[in-house]
Amino acid sequence: MSKQYPNIFRSLFPAATKNSEKKASEPASQPHDCRRSFLIRSVLATLFGCAVVSGANVDANDQIPGPAQSTPIALVGGVVHTVDAGTLNKATVVFEKGKITQVGKKVVLPAKCRSIDVSGKHIYPGLMESMSNVGLTEIGSVRATVDTDEVGDENPNLRPWVAVNADSELIPVARAGGVLLASIAPKRGNIRGQSAVIQLDGWTYKDMLLRGDTGMIVSWRSYDSRKTSAVDRVKERDERLKGLSDRLETAARYAIARAARPDWTPVDLRFEALIPVLEGKSPMIIDADDRREIEAAVAFCVARGIRPIIYGGYDAPECAPLLKKYDVPVIVHSTYRLPLRRDDPYDHPYTLPSRISKAGIRFAIGGPGSGSPGGGAAARNLPYHAAVAVSYGLPADQAIHAITLAPAEIMGVADRVGSITVGKDATLIVVDGDVLQTESNVTEAYISGAKVDLGSKHKTLADKYRKKYNQRSR
Image (spheres, rainbow, N blue to C red):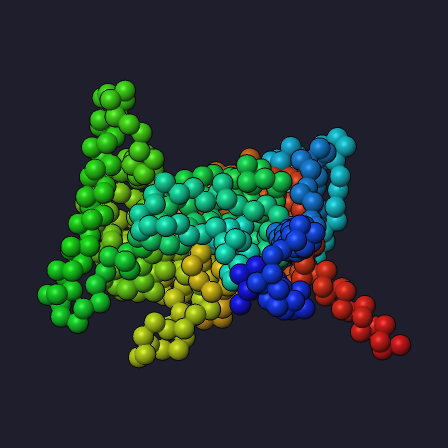
């Protein structure tokens, strides 16, 4: 091939490259060089323009974040699912300046209050996805849109909330399903980084952040051994765990050194991120399903004064005495998944929330999670994961609790969200039926009192092609 043109120009302009090859041995004239330079610049400019346009199409949605609440609002006559104080029929919820001020059947409407009749509809707290990458990923096959991974196995200093794309097309889709809050986390490595709770509306990540550093994500599967021999398995596991133990001990010594002589001890962001975990201020969220993983993780944390949270929890019912003794909550990693073992019943994942509840373990129900297929795109299905649990034995009120107040309590944001309670943020949804039913639709949504646009790309395309078929049917 001619050295004058790279492959891309050869394929785009075969005539030009062929002509160039014929005259490769001839001295190039100045006009020819100018034409070639102009050709290269033109093609590069075209390709760059296409990339910019393509990126713009991928990254942005058309929904405009709601403005801050300016006048009091009353939702009148609905079925209010407070979650923490039962269900009230034909009740009213009043909120102003982003906070819930009154809940009940007899309320006094403030001056200039805007009343909205929601008779026959249901009012719920905004649903909360317990573990997700919504806002951190857009298209899995387009690496530039994925911000859930980082190089290396230990990255405790990762703060995923600063990478949230407020213009993600997946956020409006999740909102339209009633999911107004999400706990987001990185997915790669042994010590993966910190989690955070975000509100699914806002211009920037700062607008969306409800609370950062809600936990440190650790994959216990990375430390467990798969060797067949019990002796070899324990030996390999202990060797791997020594690395985690050494990292935590080094962080503890670093904290002591920084407190004693900060001018002599350089700042290390990795150790700084681990200090709240060692002090018990922030929990360690442990990705574990197998019984031996759960038991080893809890024992490891208890011995060091660390607060554990189990994410996954497939074998959690078998560890009930241990989990109850140390009040370790479990975030169930979805119900739409296959059994982990060949000899497990087909409905083992479906009955897991019910079995955990009967065992007396605190739990929340999450979706597919940060590292699972679907990820943020499947956040919209959160209420249906809870619905499956109801179909397999979990009481409906507990299912609602597991996707509202329970994750808020586990992630340390229950003082602001999770229930319809006076003093909490007015983050709630109005549904024309049972939120666990696929036939129901969210008709109104508010985040801290700001009305949320419930449009999404899904709805836009549905309307577009509905019009198409209506036109063709005439």
